[in-house]
Image 1 (cartoon, rainbow, N blue to C red):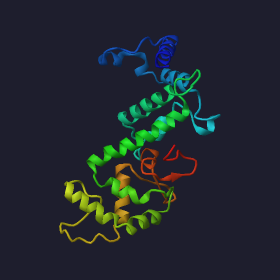
Image 2 (image 1 turned 135 degrees about the horizontal axis):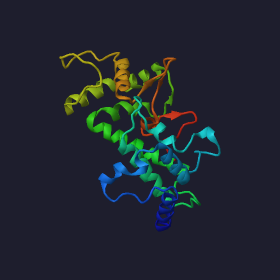
Image 3 (image 1 turned 90 degrees about the vertical axis):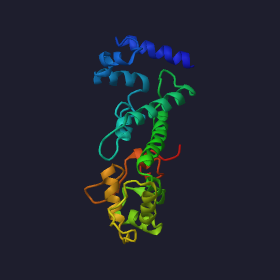
Image 4 (image 1 turned 180 degrees about the vertical axis):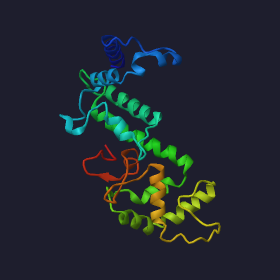
Amino acid sequence: PQYRRRKALDQLFCQRDLGKVPGKQEELRTWKLSSNESQQEKLFVAMAGDFMGAGPRKGKTFDWPYNHLADGLGDVTPRSFLILMQNATERSQSRDAGSLILLPQTIRDGLRAASKVRIEQLNTEYPWIKRVLQPLAGLRVPAEPQVLFHAWAENATVEAAVKIARREHALPPVLIGSSRKSDLSDQEPGLADRLIMMGVLTSRPDGRYDMPDLFRIGAALLKKGGVTPKA
């Protein structure tokens, strides 16, 4: 199956006058596909079909990965995109994809994998992030701020996250005084502000908090009509 898919992919490239994938990294800069978004979309549609569902309501396959891999600041890391695509490709190879090389469902599965890896990446820089996300598991977003604040307060999240930051000599989750006995009560809004600055949370015009799928899925939060954390 892998050989047949590779052959089918080579045929797609030839049909669109894209030639073969360059063998050297420096050749990628002059490759037609690297800078022509129109060609990129046509090729992606040929590989995965037009839409993520039966029609446009579920989104276009070409736009879907970028839209769902973006953090709250609108940024997408190359590694997140590559993890999604690699996972989707491997899963598609084990299924009957017919004329397609990528199945929409495997693209969704790839997002789940990318979300978990992105949180792990973030945890190397902010070792308290998992502790902060843990109490939010199972909540549905968008949510009123007090819903998140209550979950954090009930689990003494700010205090625990500050201890982790001090132990690991990392940037703290909230602004704290120089004293180790600084009052950390009612600091949940400050924690939310920190997550917004990091792109982990977003604030909607109506005041509710939302979380980009890039983090929401790995943190096991729910969203109406969104990709579920578990397949």
